[in-house]
Length: 266
Image (cartoon, rainbow, N blue to C red):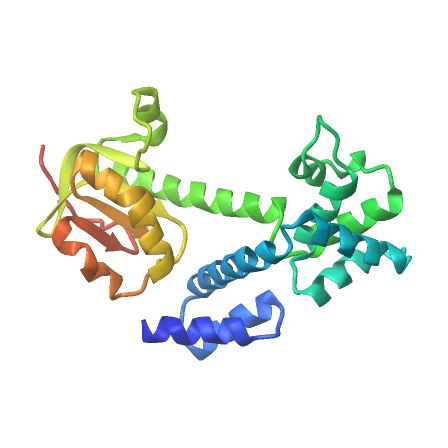
């Protein structure tokens, strides 16, 4: 926890770009690059939730749009620069302005961000495009990267289990069978890791900090525990050590990898 808090404080107070901040923190705290990256992205998401709340009022958004247009800056960097001065991710500000000006009943802001050719104002279109290309914290491309990483590590987990001849059902099969809340993998036959029986496995391509872990417990893990018994959560990019002890006696095990040696019950 102590190390995590130091990294979080370093990231929050840094005025460097994302890549430089992550690289320096990784060196200073002798921590894996992907772990620092995961912590960085969690802190960014927390900031976004706080900041977006301040600008969710449409009147506030409209006032900012009027101020932006009054400056008559036609450069492609204009929208990006305004967002940085406001402390907002550029794509988030672009999304707000799109919702004020560009929507019709057949389109959403998300659709427009993914298909910006539908923006008729060429100057505004170029400004939105610049935000999409240069925002490293928010937007469709970031969402796609996160989804791809999550799918990659879930595939790694499936390959490991297949190699160990451990049969399982994934969440797609479980949903077809009528389950609503499902772990990533439900083991057809339980396995044992040390003294702990594992019935299900949840794969998280992220870092397990106290806040996110408590939220996952409330929204996911306890539901799995109630329905399927004890299980394993893998935070592939590490976790705060103290969290592992909190649920160990209740049957939710936390690790940062899939052990290569397990006891099978068949």
